Image 1 (cartoon, helix red, strand yellow):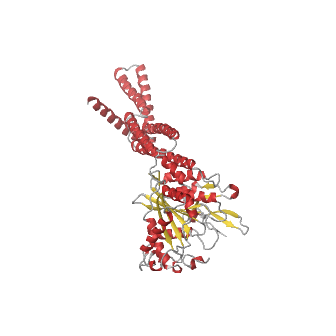
Image 2 (cartoon, helix red, strand yellow):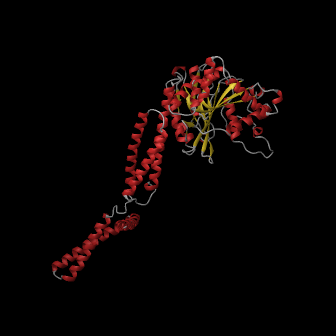
Image 3 (spheres, rainbow, N blue to C red):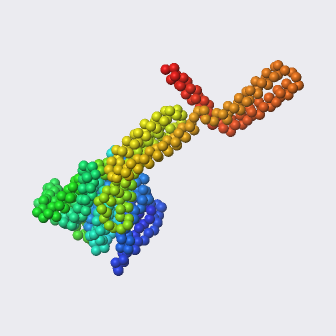
Amino acid sequence: MTLSPSSSEESVVLVEHEDGTATTLEKELPKSDEDAPHAVNIVSIGTETTGYAFRFHPERLQAILAKVPSHYKVKVVSVVGAFRTGKSFLLSWFLRYINRTSSSDNKKWYEQVDELQEGVFHWQAGKERDTTGIWMWNTPVVDEKDESVLFLVDTQGMFDHETSMNLTACIFGFSTLLSSYQVYNVDKRIQEDNLQQLALFSEYAVTAMEDQSETAPFQMLEFLVRDWQHYDEEEEDNVDRMEESMKEYLDQVIRERDVKDLQETREQILNTFQNIQCYGLCHPGFAVTKKKFAGQASDMEPLFLRLLDRYCTRVFDAVPCKQIHGQTITVTEFGNYCKAYAGLFAQGAKFPQAATLLDATATANTTNAKLTAMQVYTQGMDRTAGPHCTNYVPPQELQEQHELLRKQSIKAFQEKANFGNKQKILEAKNRLEEELSEQFTVYESLNNGRNPLLGLEVYVIPGLVAAFAYVLRWFTDATCSHTVCRATSEALHHTWTVVTCFLLIVGATKFQQLKAMFQRIQQAVGVLLDAQKEKKE
């Protein structure tokens, strides 16, 4: 049975056998399909033999990130929850909502959906697992006005007989670390074990806030209760009242408890997430449970579709930009964080200690701070003396620009690298200083290549020799008629002729260089005149 979607570079298929074993098959996608919209497996999860170790695929993630400007802000909607509760199905509806078009017959966007099989996250009805690992949609949603980009992430289902509690915690943890809008997909109601999963991050939250962070480390958490059974019949025509019921339900779930450990769990969750919400979707209809169901909206319950419409609007109108320790993350920085977080689980599905988790975050943040600082320097120097510049900059002026941009670069680094091990931050700052000096040497070399006096000796010295020979010959012919003088005159004539021919040949073969040389001479004269004016002033 085929259970996974294809990746951008290869099709990764999990085949589950009757004896319970699983085999992963990989095959190349046709070239024409590589750029087609589809889900990409950015993190695969091993088997029991490998301790369910996470394997990060940086080249696949980079292929997605490369489609958008590197400085754009990142928004990530990730769906996590128990297996076979409709996570991929939900994400597929998200895609239909994002790509919706207006209808000439005034149909709702969901009424235009004839099927939900092509151009969506792979899903299927039934009881078998369908998604393994962590998947990302390969076509980001770009908002040019806001200069942000939205990524959709699907995760392997949890709480089944094949997934240990450690692996469940790791999947949930990785998804939470990546997302700015975490959808926690639960069945029928929010249970105590759902809350305990969230409490895993409480120690990290406390550690992070001790490290000068003023707010909870994670942003949006939304419980999406599937097959919601708490609506009254009279509410079915009033979606606003239904949403009020959802809020009341959440307040009831997280209200104070008399039992100490239950109350601690709730306090930990509130300290971990900045915003916690709840939404309920009723059962979509019995047609959805049949294996032949292909996503036809006409076969689904009208109330489910109405609630789904409201929910999609609710989510995508409120997705915040991803922030870590109060700093908004760019596309480039997001890639570095993904790599750092996946590395925490590379040796097996063991949830990392809070200090380890914070250290990985701080290390990635320091790396991003160094990259940002280098961009500040190189962008400024590129405008002054970069590869595309044509004007020569006097050395003193270039040195002054270097010092100015170096200070701005260091300031940018210090503003961003504001948490984590102080010694590691200092070491990164020292490396940055060294790289800035090395980079300045490159700009000096580029600028020297545009020096208007550079290479003039190739033409000036032979020219002076030819001129001297010509003048001396003229003087000899005018003042001396002796045989020796005539021989000297002929020798000077030959010298003048040879040098002149040499200059003509060089000029013919290097016309463009000569043209540039004359331009440099003009610049040199201008530089000298400016220098004289400055001295007079």
